[in-house]
Image (cartoon, rainbow, N blue to C red; front, side, top):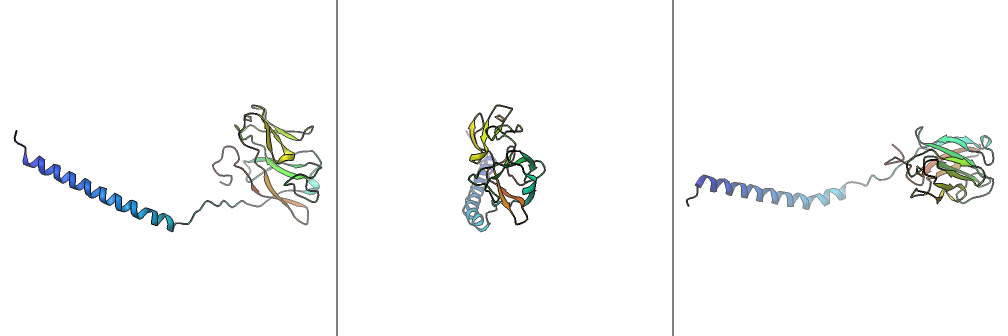
Length: 173
Ligand code: FES
């Protein structure tokens, strides 16, 4: 069988072009890590400091509704009446949490009897005296807790959140 010389040439050209692309790709792959090293990491999220309330606004064991870090993120401030780990204020008893359940985002309600936040969706429960630790239910993480600061005038500021709030890829949009 006799081969067509044009087809043979076209085949050689394709092969050579492909080899050229492969070489260029390998060169680019060699160069990319150096470029990646040159770019600074941008993972740091800066939270807004937001005044949520004043000490005078809080009553022991009564939830005070707030929103943080923006108006679409409901949360709660609680004056628990006993000093707790991570508690803010002169008595070390003020804590703040998101009220969106980490499981599927149902709105949590506060139970004054055992100082827990409870989910009406699938019944997860979170201990407000233990940093929002999950004590029962479907959720797979503890409740995101606010980092709080109280200034000399008694104003209570949130300055961060320790876990990802439900439904977000970043707490600060
Ligand atoms: Fe809260 Fe499912 S949404 S446990």
